Image 1 (cartoon, one colour):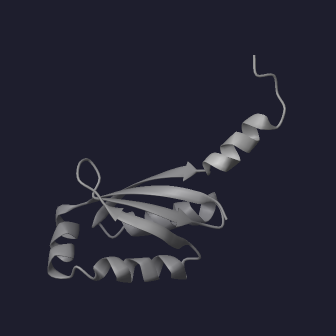
Image 2: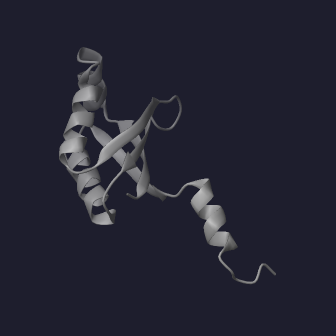
Image 3: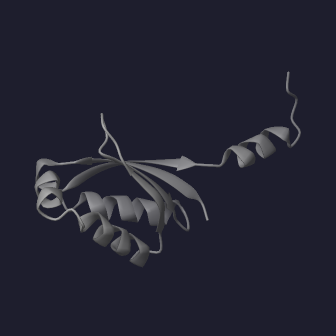
Length: 100
């Protein structure tokens, strides 16, 4: 399944929710799995984004639906990036084509 990097910023409402219920992140991951997507890894980060999640989804349509549904709650803003493994990138670059 395709991989995506989801960069998430909590809104003030989302920060209040997380502060009062830190286990909410696990509940969200369960909701994500019900959408046909799967959180492979998740990190809390400092800086511009509060969370970085690596997600598998069946296709772009599924991850767009997921991103919009989550953002529609008003508790998080999401930037989603398609991603491929380094191995797949190297393979794609090695599949012919003139390197010059």
